[in-house]
Amino acid sequence: MAKVALIQREQKRAKLAAKYAGKYAELKAIAGDAKRSDEERDSARLALQKLPRNANPTRQRNRCEITGRPRGTFRQFGLGRAKIREMAFAGEIPGITKASW
Image 1: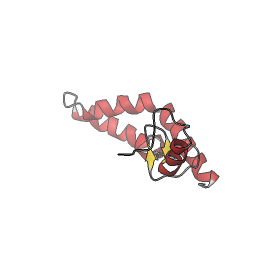
Image 2: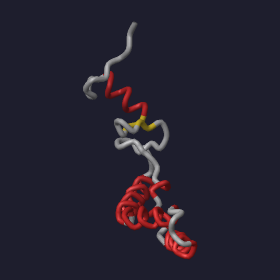
Image 3: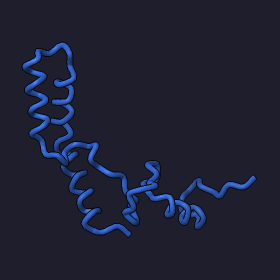
Image 4: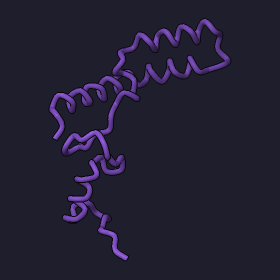
């Protein structure tokens, strides 16, 4: 089980990223648009730097919803590999069965 503070930090990052998502995408589009003037692009880059650091979506870490484990997390389920295995063997994940051939 991950520390509660780490899980809360990730939740805080997710909330901040959602809050600034529109502004972040808009500034990112301006900064990458070659048709705009250099001054506009530079001002967009500076505005991006002034946004909170945790507003950047790349700072988020995928964690298991149950245990909070940061590694071995499957996006499709939002669970860590160990929890997927346990739940699949118990039949709690629909459509997942143990392979045998």
